[in-house]
Image (cartoon, rainbow, N blue to C red):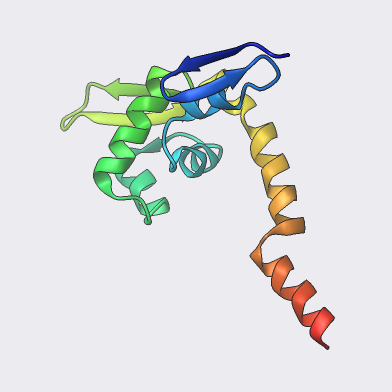
Length: 123
């Protein structure tokens, strides 16, 4: 029998750390932002253009959450106007392995693969 602890409305068990992962990542856009920052450091406006589906406030909230959890580094440069650049920390870069595995999974099981298998079944 595994021990269960209620934490932040998420039920955790000894055998699963998925709840902790979701709390660290925090927002639905975290995966997209982390994936984009794997390309290298970006200023806010550049990042916002590259993840255009994310609204400004959501991007701000996601970046703050990822920074708070040690995945993103926010650097302020004393220029006029001030320049702010976001990059991944070592912890953030290590998430690339998980993103790569998710990419493999979606290539096998994603919508485009589902449509292809349904097409071949009905042919």
